[in-house]
Length: 214
Image (cartoon, rainbow, N blue to C red; front, side, top):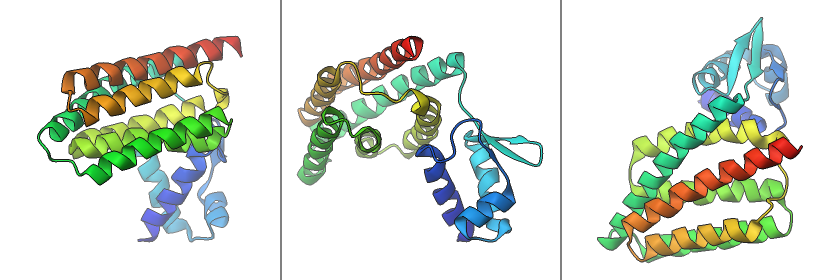
């Protein structure tokens, strides 16, 4: 459907920073940018409003960034959900319900993310990091957790794009990814949950520190 296409394309533009927080969008402007009619664009804006990426403002919408307190809460919820999905993924692996090819794909994404981060390809690293965590959520086999995480990931990504800088400890971050992959591959649910939760909270602490220094 045209509405789904419009929603997907507009969401990608927002997540990539083409429409940064505070940017005002109107149906007419977005329709012209996407080369689409206004009807699917109108529905797409309504859907993105429900997702929390934009909010009504006058005759259009404005791209939303979470305030610091709300961002902290978003990370807390993300930490809880990612601990859950990591635990579920490790449990399914222990039960022999995850294909070796899927585990190999997870390992490769972790490697690709570390490489992109180390080489300073930040935009690519952000996309790969998102893919890494999404794959774990997919391996968990819980669609409700995945859906909730997608919304939180979107809001966090938009809210932190302005402070996007090379991580102060890329090796540490990559090491946590490796620990998480190992815990899942070895089928250790409690360890996977612990590492996943610590990783998300550490990410927030590092981001917070970089925002204060900016």
